[in-house]
Image (tube, rainbow, N blue to C red; front, side):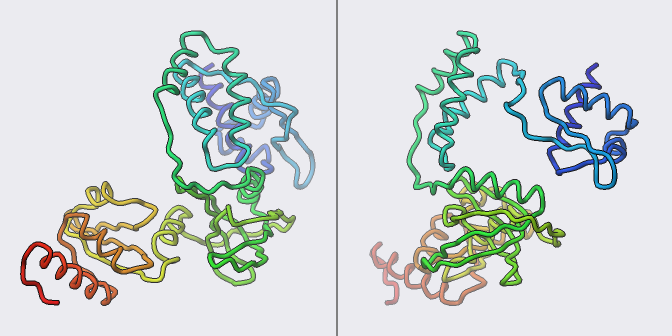
Length: 320
């Protein structure tokens, strides 16, 4: 029975990954017969999942949209985790999520045993959140972009660049990335014939098209967005060799501001961007390790000037 349940859950996961699956393709992925697939589909339907089946060329199984969500079975730890996450969502980065979270919490609170309800409230009472300048994005736009990534369809939207310049974009989206403060989309810009990252809070009038595209070769969206956020958008880009292991450097830096690569067990390449070289020089000095600037040369000048001022402030005889 446990094996059957696990297979049905795996089937549900596959149906969520693409619009249509043929019976033979599902049977091959799950290592069963097409007859078993038909039985498992009926089990999903009995649980409330609207699985549609069509015959002929281009037909297959498709997970449809139902009138409501099927029932969820949660153990105590899962129920507490869901409730706490919903409470935190009230201050999240997706517009409308706070209202939806509160409505869901009200429903969950009604069926929660008193002991679990008190645990959730104790965690909430002991927790405070700080406003960190998070940019709010439209929840409907986020869902439309997620579906476009899943279904490999082009998307059109209006976009405002960093300098407030408006433009109309048509893109082939491949991934959404959340940095904690903002949401980004990695996509191939059709008109500019190149890969780009887009901040969701700068998008308006998001409209998926019916144009399906064949996904191009690309790097991992998270790595691409991290590099773009950390350096590409800034006036200066720097490469610094830090005399410390990658793990230790990562503990003192943020993925939103630097890209780290291990050179060897004791040395790390740090790539970062900045609007001012003096700000970057300060943060490098703050790390507390020896380092060597590979580029730009102007950063070495800024470090020399800062070092001289620091020596003079300490009563030394640094050169002016």
